[in-house]
Amino acid sequence: MSGRKHAYESGDVNGMQLPLQTLRAFGCEVLVQTNAAGSLHARMPPGSLMVLTDHINLSQRSPLVGEGGSERFVNMMNAYDAALRANALAVAARGGVALHEGVYMWHLGPQFETPAEIRMFQRLGADAVGMSTVPETILARHAGMRVLALSMLTNMAAGLSDEALSHAHTLSQAQATSSVASQLLADVIGAIDHE
Image (cartoon, rainbow, N blue to C red; front, top):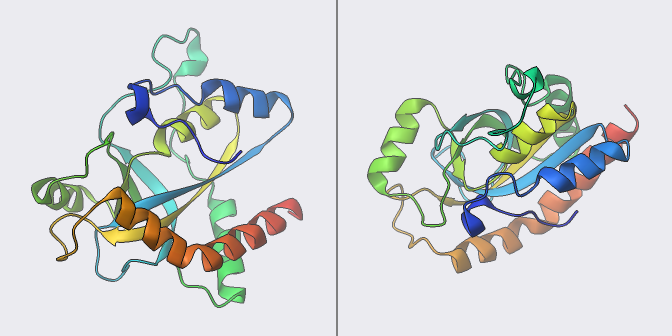
């Protein structure tokens, strides 16, 4: 797929349920996700890449609300597959690409966060913040899929630099880093295929 439905578009956090269920029905066992995110740490400046080790569902909204049966109580202990992450790190190292590891905070959006919120996120243990990925991870785990997620850090989060945050800025920074990120993604998917 190219792109996703974001919860901030309609308030519906299960907008990706049908696409992911369809992929699973076709035999897809691994979901590889990408996102643009704001960095909460100077060690990961704009243009950096991060593989998710875990996430924080700040909004505490779940796409599984209303589901029946015991399967809705999904174990999120290993939401992001350790073997897939190790594979991505190895691929990045072979290609000479710096790939950070970190915790992603899901903020519903669509507005950017305030500096006070960013300070809170840092204290809660987040390394990056974005407006996607978490609902899809929950749905994929519910469907029995393994998940790998990569963030392109397009900006320093609010209050951590003098840059003015905007969607246009996010897109321009993503474009500037896209060739390295796209090559890494292709190499990581190729390595998964040979797993």
